[in-house]
Image 1: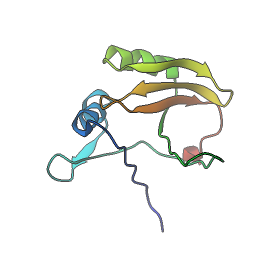
Image 2: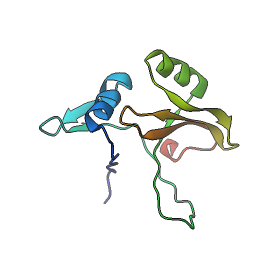
Image 3: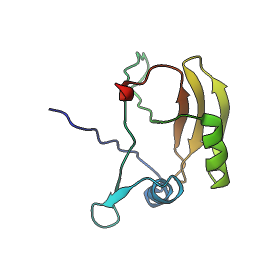
Image 4: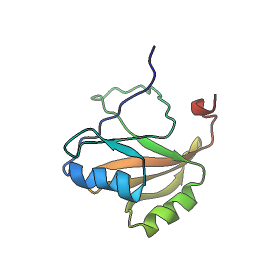
Length: 116
């Protein structure tokens, strides 16, 4: 039986991104050895979307109040690369990781599978 998922983010500065997840976002973590952090994620969901172009995968953090979360993270020095927009299914923005990558952040307006 599947009992979890492991997400890998590839980064140009893995140490900086690990520190960001640990120190700025405050996510609980374990050290798997040699500084390789395994970061605990909040409850997760997976969705499959059609795509004609080359395959790509995305990571979005979910929150209950995107505007409040943006204010709190901005105060901690997080850079947002897109304004909050209304996508219909939720309020969406993107934040930059120290290693140069980006992840999404959104406030869902749809039922969350994690709530089942």
